[in-house]
Image (cartoon, rainbow, N blue to C red; front, side):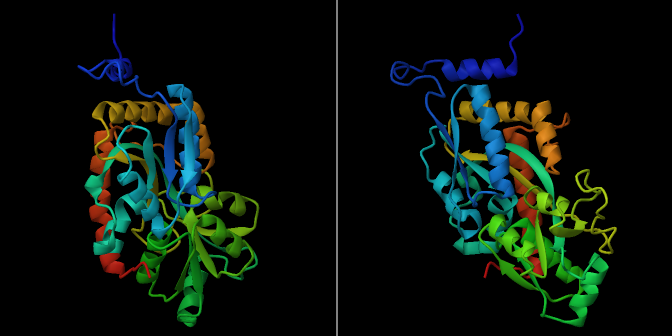
Length: 330
């Protein structure tokens, strides 16, 4: 008889330990909580809810999602870092909470990388640079020209300080020699409302959040930040194609747990997330949103160890971007 890795993990979680077997039921014995550290309607919320729905089905136990926004994701991240490490509390982390914020907040950062354990990467998505549909700007080259002609007069909106859209625009300003004022919002939803209404000159957001507005013609996409054009917006050039060479800024979203969460639980959830990200239904859903699978392992999947190594690399990479761009949270 062949025992699969997932079956072995499940058996490990069900095995009793000396003296504690009768007191502790097999995990999961109750509702699991996913904390999204940003408001509803953004990409983090979308990714978290898709993962929670599919994990509920695989575990046979409800996985609920709660939104705890604030401080560029740090409020929700700190809540999970301080939560009981019992396998029932997880963080839907992002490139900002798990990488950028460490450099951007510096000594004020309320958590350290070692306070949270890697579980799995859910998806990667490009950002989109866009303008309101009524804008006279029709290309990135035109935007750069207008911005150079009116230094400091234009503004751009982002879902909040410290996210990849913020960092994307700061690097774009640096590389293009322009001065555009940052207007941070508390999440993608409020920012997109203002952008669609024409009260922002420019905006930048993760593709899943703004894709519907672009497709419906309420926003005009000027460029995507991935190395290649997105299958979701095939007519929109990359930043490199639009005149900013060697420029790539891909956002990503995953799951973390309190650092002292039992290793068998982390491995079990990590294994389930790996299976979810390979599920044809999941792949179709994230593809429709402009996303792509984790691709952290040789076979395209995700594991806790691979995600941990990936995040460590990203922390180093974005620390350099923050330093070079001079970006701040204020």
